[in-house]
Length: 495
Image 1: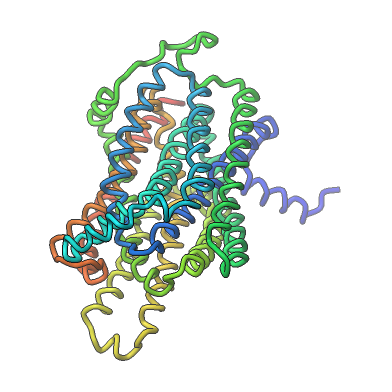
Image 2 (image 1 turned 180 degrees about the vertical axis):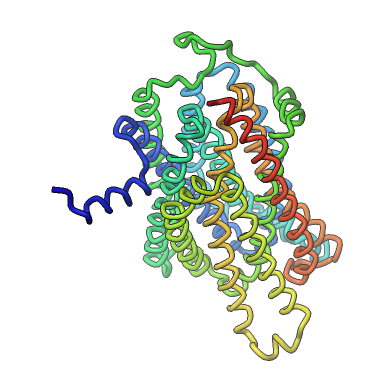
């Protein structure tokens, strides 16, 4: 006897998890691997801002300097190193080595550098520089003063770019085809959302527990969690690689196939620049990073003003991250996959620029009003900044939710029909350099404006930043058109 309610439940379950029985093991392992990597990234991302922004003589304006002048050049070096290592190491060996390298740096920060930050930080030299410059370039001096937190910030940024964007998705894209991706990728993205939902209250719990003692205890406990999950990542990757019988190295001797490509970074970049398709992917990568970070820079400036203490700052950010995970998970499971399958790649890809652009422009208009309309400040008083922090948090929540649910998925799908050369080297160049160039671009814009207008605060520059954001969103929106036309042709060839 067939029960109508049971039949409805099966259809609903199949809509959310459109997986065949034969695919269950592979999907589960890839899903769990994504969860583990995202768990570590969520913790790194939560701590990197708090420890740096709330440090003494520091501010949110330090973040653009770190991203633009430190993280970006290191990212270039990472791509060069990745291209060289990929020519000489098997993909599993490269994966394990990368995870162990990050793990060593995380442990070094948590148990050696952070506990001794006051002794190892050049406070005396930084104070002398601040006096010598007459109070100018204080944010640059803060970067020098807090090199320990800057190092951790760089590690956190590179984990997201190298481990999550390059290593993980290269592995997944080697396993899946476009028609598989339209069914699986929403689930993989949702694993990252689940990680965000779990880590946010976990971080909040330890932050509150040790809020009256020392933030060091919170940092060390979270570092312990990250170390455990890094070990789990290595084991899960080994299991997934073995279970799927997949060797990611194109020229491995155990696999009969095309000879492994030995391209330099310059060759990879030339390949990217010669492809209109890859250039369009690079444009949306750069635009996404630039638009989200250019708004976050101003929002975090207000956030530091309202929550100057590390525990309070971390607690508010953890709450935002929790709800980001909840909303992103709901969108990934119930909307993004269905929109992608029903309306196509272009419609799904355009959700992110429309949402980020609309919310970001509204936030900049609020900030512009606060700094150029005295009557508004007189009317609302100190509550105005609090409301701006709340709205900025909602903006950040929605921007990241649609990025996780729509942008990440549609961007990775765009790589699938490409040849092995482009998947291995072109993807690394576009993902790492493209995404980093977006973040660095937003940082350079903010740094240049701070220097041009001779101010230590980014808040009064909201009107100019509004224009930059609008231009970026238009370019992002138009680039999706170019990708969609060529993706249809590439998908037809795959079939």
